[in-house]
Image (cartoon, rainbow, N blue to C red; front, side, top):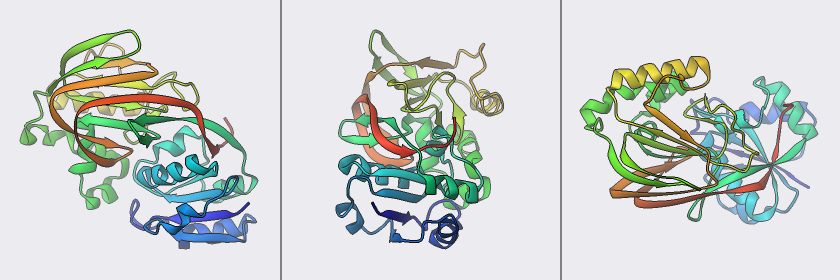
Length: 289
C-alpha cells in the first residue's frame, strides 16, 4: 500500500497545495508520500488496489482522482482545497486540517455511490442551465474573494445573459414524466452541491440520485430562495420554484443543445442526457458520522 498526494495548485485561492498538506500529513505519521501534480498523468497508470490517493483540490480535482481510484480499486482521500468542496461535506470530514490529517492516517473507509452521465463519472452534481454559471461565468478572482458565495453572486447576471425564460425539457425519472420550462436542472449523487446547499434526507450512500429542477422566476426571488436555503439547509417549504425528486435513473431531453457541467467542469453542449447511480462503487476515507 502506498500513499499518494495529488495536488492541484490552481484550486481555490492556491494556498492549500503540497506545501500546506505535506508537513501536516508527515506530522500525522504518513512519512512516505508519492507526490504528484494533478496536471501530470503518469500517476493514474501506476495506481494499485489498496493504494490511498489523497487529493488536495476542489471538486473537479477530486472527480479526476475518483475516476482513477474507481478503475483500479484504490482508496480516495479528500483534502479540501477548492471553492465548494461539496464531496468533502458528503464524507463528514473534519474542517480542521490537522485533525483531518490524523483521520487520514487512520484511514477509516467506506463505500459511497457515484453517478454516471453516460460514461462520465460524477460525485456531486450535473448541472444544466443556471447551475452552469459558476463554472462558466464566475471569474477566478470572484471565486477567491467570495468562496462558495460566488454561486449566489452570478444570479443577477441572468437578465444580462438572457436566461430568465429558461428552456423547455422533458424529464423522465423512475416513475414520472415532466415536461415544462425550467431555469436550471441539477442531478446530484450526494447530499451537498452548489457550495454547501443540502438536500434533506439525501446522502452519498443511499443508492439514489437527487433531481432538483428550478422553474423560471425573477432573479431577485431566486436569490432570496438561494440565501434562505443556505441559512436553513433546505429549500423553503412554501416555495414552488423548486421541484425535488429522488430517482435511481433520469433521462433529460431538451429541444436545443445546452451547456452541461459535472462537478464544476464543463462537458460541452448536450440535447439528451441519461444519468444513473452506481451504489457503493467507490472506497473513500470518511469521517465520524
